[in-house]
Length: 158
Image (tube, rainbow, N blue to C red; front, side, top):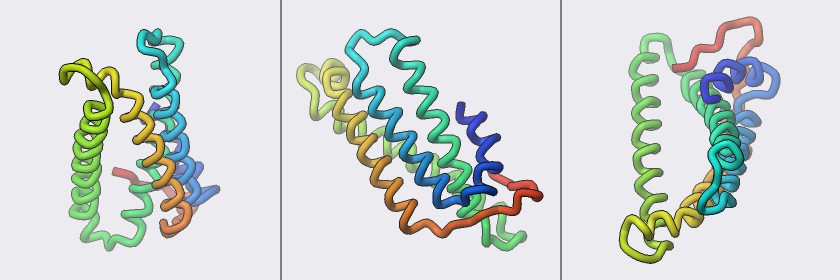
């Protein structure tokens, strides 16, 4: 779903701009995290997990496209390689830190030995992720510089 959203994202950006698409994408991510938090302990894949993963994929794809276009919009052509590399590094570091922080929250909120604590505290991790994504959506909607690519030109994303 990330790929599908990333493919459709440039068309949506041309109509709505990066500010709205980034905010909406992050709100969709928040919704996916809430679905995971609401899933019962023995949730079925098709009934609970797959829908949440699809929602997360759409939100993530839209958010990545908006972030990439916003970050690269005013970069001089001779600096696009370095800027794209910095953006990719930020994605990787952010993802790694996010997993570490949310795993720590889930383990701390859970009870029992480490592995069991992680499982029993998973809701706290998903709820934290949902609140963080919703907060970032508000920041994106209010602070991100809106970029609206021309709909007749190809939008390059990394």
